[in-house]
Length: 287
Image (cartoon, rainbow, N blue to C red; front, side, top):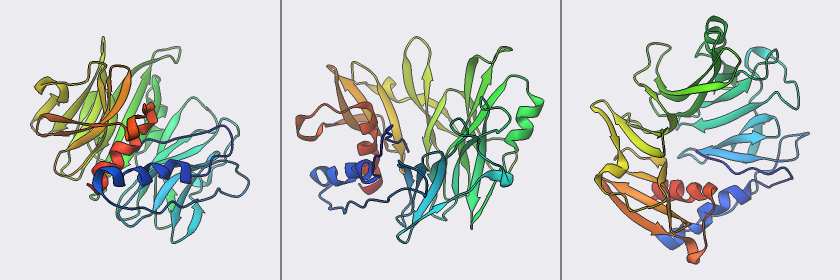
């Protein structure tokens, strides 16, 4: 999931408030909850939620899971320490088993980002992303973005040149510390339990592609309706994709089903900023 952030204190209910807008589209009601912040931190941002209502995100430079009315600090992999303001641990996704994935920065080199997984109160780096970094001089980071019910993890691998300038981003589906199922050039966005993945590929313009075991497809190839382009935000187990498209300088939520776009419009005619891809996710998850 994507997130909202603020340089000032931003109660997390502002992020989840988008869910309160969903009833206009799918006729459901929601309760807005302020999740608060971790001790010593002044802001919080939600990045993921599962079907049990557990929420993950980050508060300041630390990550949390909010469950049963309490916010818990996920800690730092390998018992490490953070070096503020550059060091951070950022949760990015949670599955229905309560497994959490995200990224953290190396204390020795803030330009490197490693992956972590949290489960049953323990945080670790099962991806061996630190070892990858040690063996690849052009490695800039391993960034898990989501985890599905099978424990498969969608991640981005960042590569740079000899001076550390980013030159490539590759998407992976990681499973059981073995060969990834997918390795494509682009930015991983979301995936489901099939698994199918959506990712953003940019070369003289950006396109959202859906990956399956049969190959990849540009979702706009069957008839795009957004003149300013579109970006997927979520995909469910039926292969429906929700996201954000630009039409006439207005951002619209959309639903893509079997090659057909449905323009969900805007809420009350209000122009949606880019982070309102969260609204599309809410529609997809609940609808």
